[in-house]
Amino acid sequence: MTLGIELEREDDGRWLAEVPTLSGVLCYGTNRDEAVARVQALALRVIAERLEHGEVGPELISVSFEAA
Image 1 (spheres, helix red, strand yellow):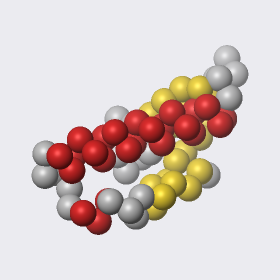
Image 2: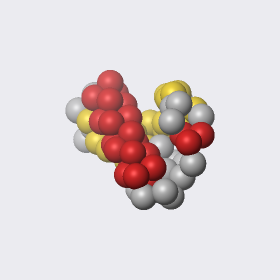
Image 3: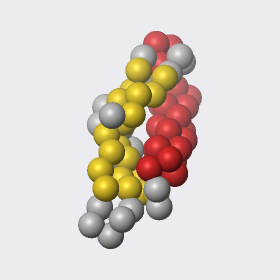
């Protein structure tokens, strides 16, 4: 499964990265790369938590990201 990452630059210069298919998975970073790294890490934690609780199937075990 490929998870898309949406990026937006705020007026104050910070970057916001979000994985829209995973509710609540969004992170700020001081630059684009930092925001992407943080949102990827958070997405993986959310997926791991859902796997542990049986909320998703094994189709998410292979995950890749694509930043827009």
